[in-house]
Amino acid sequence: MTNPKQERTPCEVFSRSMGFIRPVKNFNIGKYSEFCERKTFTEANSLTTGERHSELMKKAA
Image 1 (cartoon, rainbow, N blue to C red):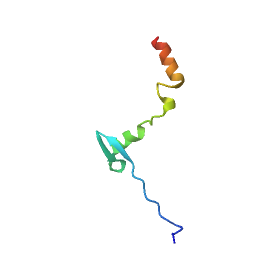
Image 2 (spheres, rainbow, N blue to C red; image 1 turned 60 degrees about the horizontal axis):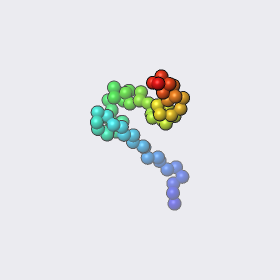
Image 3 (cartoon, helix red, strand yellow; image 1 turned 90 degrees about the horizontal axis):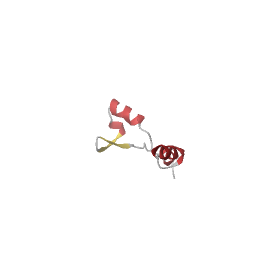
Image 4 (tube, rainbow, N blue to C red; image 1 turned 180 degrees about the horizontal axis):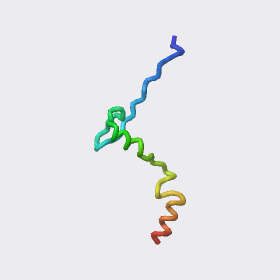
C-alpha cells in the first residue's frame, strides 16, 4: 500500500561551467549569478526564423 503523503525527490540541476558539467547547487555566488542571467534558447528567438531573420537579411543585402 502506498503512502498518500509521499515525499518528493529533489531534482538536481547540472550546468556546464568552465568546461565541466557540475551541479548548480555547488556553484559559488558569482557563478550562480551568471547561471541565473543566462538566456534559454528557443527557436522563435533564433536568428534563422521569424521577423528578426528577415530584418537581418534585408540589412545584409
